[in-house]
Length: 325
Length: 260
Image (cartoon, rainbow over all chains, first blue to last red; front, side, top):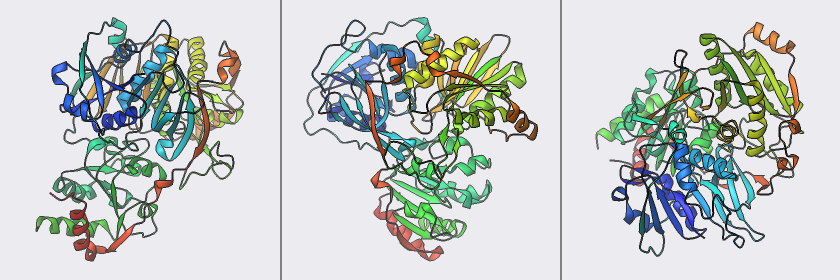
């Protein structure tokens, strides 16, 4: 039975988080991508590479969570009359990336069709006794939950920092279907007016390099070398919770359970002790380098490489060395 | 403006999370309880809206009697009344949680329901949205800035998504979930604490808020157990101390392929 997967697009390509969701979806059955974009704007080759066989291109005027959920509900086989009976593990499923949008749209979908929604799964597979065996993140990934989802349609999102994005072994052809959506004014009431964010530049969630600063930075002014290093490496600055509580940096830069979860190639954590809520936000980094005066800071145990020292001395020297190359 | 804020009692986690021997719950013998930072901000936002536009703030939680501790904390921050939807403390599905909370909101005739974007323990990301369907009200989630125009009775809610600022405009009554960063919550004042200590908390049995008791258990979603992920720790290679470590650090950054 078809596995529908909401695909988010970013600068004309499939968003990294959606590639991860497609990878998880592929393990459950043939994948139909659902994208809210005109057919001409779809990265069809990229979708094919991830094993997508059908794409539903839904006409949409911007992001409207309830309207998007209704459009997906209308693609679900049998709904709203009767869900098809299927052998265990062969029932339809709807997936999305565990992004703010993915979790929001799937929660609306769960409320609309009256079924459970499992957020931020790291694994999903047909269960021997029926339904799907899931592993879900709790505490933003600090704990894992083993669960069984045995519903007529499985609704789940894929954790953005724990499922790897892997292209399909044998990509096939892709059929594109244009879908018109018929929406009520009530659905469109919840529509986002979009504008470039004030901060601009690369987004923390998708940055390839994040230079992190914590209490050890000491002040708002102390961030100058971190900014300089981030711009040298083509990355962005991220901070720990204490930094935003102190008002040194805006909350939009907070990495952690109540901030942003990051998945960079490199997280350079400077003067960050490594509270568990911060670790939840950066555990998805491919590599972690920690700079800290305290060799026993929890962050050091979570890092691949460590420099024991004062960031106010190490960073200027590092910047100088990089400029001299 | 009559505002209902929904909060959840969760364990305070510090250096590490440990589980009970049966792997079904977080071991709380050595820790206290709290509410999520998102929810603390929801309470603060509600108190500010009422300070500006009049009205009152009611705080509600679904949980065991011990959750009165969290309700009293919210009262000390400026909420004026508190309601406990009493359970035996076992975990309830997002569907039942939303149904029970929506029943309280519906009975209270609130103009605005505020929640945190997600509970810090279960992280289901859906209770506010499911409530809005029970209440037939609009909902927006993950909000980082909220304004209310009394003359038009419209809310303007903003958030950021991957470098894009999103603005939603919706009429009351509505459900809004907020994220940490929308404000900087105040600390409880001394008079606030005294008032909170004396306050009478209304208790409602959870069974009186949902019409079908069989909904308390969900056959469609069963939790088997919890575990701590194995891949947490990495083994840090110490590159050196102070500026002397910089050449080695540059070499490693080169190896990782992040140098321009």
